[in-house]
Image (cartoon, helix red, strand yellow):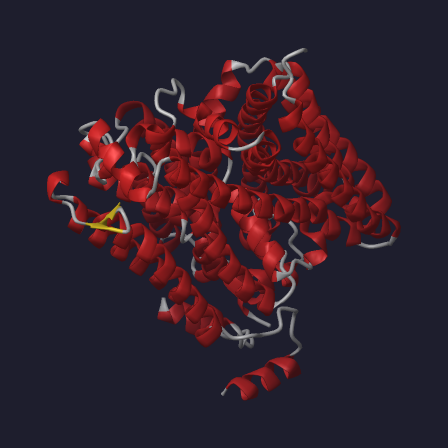
Length: 495
Length: 107
């Protein structure tokens, strides 16, 4: 334990204390809601009582969809492939305004009408089919637990690398923090810690990119240095022929730009804001922050090859730059940023899984009367958050092959399950249950098959064609089966 | 699709949805324009051999236009879209009377 870097650890500890304080602050709201009668508890625990303001909405949305990928993996790949990967990453910039304006106020209005606190609530009210609801809930539980396992492993490795504490200690430290503030504070704690984390991420990204530019002797110097190393580093095609091709890179706009609307952890945020003004501000802040974060982090990675050459693993680029360019205590603050990125993603996912277990399955199928008993709901929610957390912890200690496999398909699987049922259910009156089934089965099925035998259909990312096929199947089957009942249409389109 | 609409029109349609649909289309349109800008400058100027690149502020022109200018421009366009074209509205359930009043206010 002698090689612990206290200079880096100290600001990290301060940061963790800040996160705990937010959890304790939010606990007041949760405990108030759990003592009232009626459905108040779940609305507070799952959507923060629909009280998000514009800035918090933007921060919690952006930090949820920008995961460790954008802070560790992405800059690492930019280190190897140069500006091409920064260019590719820019496809994440529109996600903020796109998600919020496409789901828009209509989604928020309908969520209030039908009292939805999870995406599955929306699916249940729109399609009224138990099998579909159970299918959606199970896919949330399986995919998100796997995705969280992978993120926890990443966070623990990062702590291990930056601070020098053993992997198990790092994992325990991280798990306990996330679990405590999520369990006691619910959605409000998650959204507020996301905001703190978003601010730290933004400051960290700006500090990193400027530090790197100064250390490299200016942008011009660095770009010419990259050109000397390999001319491919400053082209949109990267250094390997046939890797960053035009159609493949462009298709990332579908995967990480537009289709993110279908991720339940992202879309649930579109039902939690307070009023239309919050939405408007959320779009503005969200767009600006995601642009700064995406460009800042990835440029740092790309410039890194000149400033700190010869790093063996891309994942170490950001930690290396932070510790070699900055004094330890600033490095600690900067390294809090990727850790924050992981935390802000997993806390939301954790809550979505708990929502699926408590709200979507227990309340609806085990005992519907429970929903009105806030005290019992609170107890069930707390217990399941902790149980899910412990499961993820055990998985992260020793990842089983099933987790690795599920994580590989997590985002694509969730997007192909939820994207069209949400969008078509919201905007197309004719969308019906058989259509939703056809869309989900076609989407998930063809994705699984293509990822084995046809990884880049017509040069695009594997997800693109399955999403298109899923849409076609959804529309054709809907058109040829009975239209949804008048009652559903009236609930969704009437006043 | 039209006749489906006719047949189910036995209730008062939520008067806010017209504007909501418009806003959703605008957001989608902005996303597509963003993609076109990014693609046109990125591949339009970046596809020639790197020896022939021109530079601005040290960055290759294709990258500067596609990512830096594109990023700033579309942030500004998003701000314009929201402040000029998006409308404030209540998000709670409306009574028939409120819906009527809202409709009169909008038109």
